[in-house]
Length: 499
Image 1 (tube, helix red, strand yellow):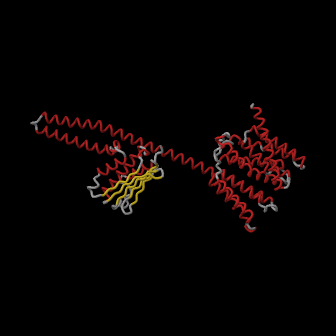
Image 2: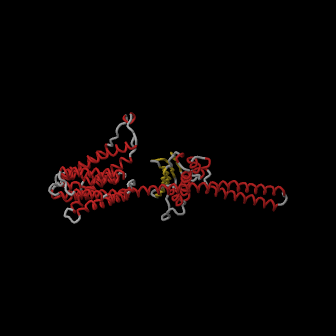
Image 3: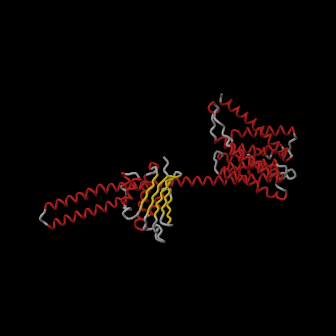
């Protein structure tokens, strides 16, 4: 099939579909306003404007010419009045549509407001040929109502058709079950029935509360489905209003109700969309900050590990050399007591330096984590602190998959255990301590409990090493909480790393 033939088929199909929809909507509008020329300004205007706001510019002449052909035909069939004014108004509405056409592919809250502004401007321009006549206000009300009722519906349908990935119909697709999304359909139908029941069942003395009842489906669907839900709810309300038989004596009230609920849906949809965009942006920034913070923690641990390795290698070798030289000096002068005493003193000082460096290395980088798993490192820590010798009964219950933890998380959990156990030994006067680690809902949980006296009143975390731990846990996207009821309980929640 040649591109020209494909284009002709598309144009012919567009003319047929648009003409049929336009005539059906004109018939419904005629039932509401009872004047053929005014019926053109209601739903047919909204259909044309809604399609123009969404479709490429190449289809605009097709829509305009199709509408003109229908207007000319109606002028012969039903004596349609003001034919030149209707055709002129259709041309004038092209101006605001052309101004915002470059934004039609965007789907943010500004797009909804831009299209709403274009609808209002187009309604004013469509009514402009009636300027100076008594019918101008009626024309403006009709165009505003029709545009704000149908154009958002066109936006929802166009968004669904263009954002859905369509697959060619084949044997594999036919065999797949149809996903009817029954919950969504039942939800829509229930709200529609409630809205229709409110229109038909409210007593006359409560009719002034009808607009508030119309807002309920809009709010409910907007909350669950965003701006699409708000615009679908306005269409449901419009159908319910038209289907009710309470408007025959007051058609202007019907138009005002349609206009009010359409504006409510449009503005609420824009607000919900803005809220969702801000929430997504906030979630993105929080995730980005969390990744940066975790990277900083891991970088810090990497630097600590490198410094600890350098200190261990260089200073360890130097101290060994000093002790060796001190021993050589003592053997070279076995009869000189002062030399032997000085050599022994040098050797003792070197051992002191070695012990200090070893303690510093332990603070820089827990040596247990280099050779042991996290659970084994915690058990080794509990043995090193000699809890049993201090009369403290200890229990470790550990069920954590260490493969899901980053290096920064491993070190942070170990340091929390280290600080918590250190505080228990020094300050709690406890007789029992329990340390638990487990996974829950893609998070790792750590709890350290004792039956001691708790932290001193008013001390907070300062001076107990847990203030820095809370900062590290928070940087990794977790929380650290401390309670001092019947002992001390340190609770840590950390998100697991996805692998």
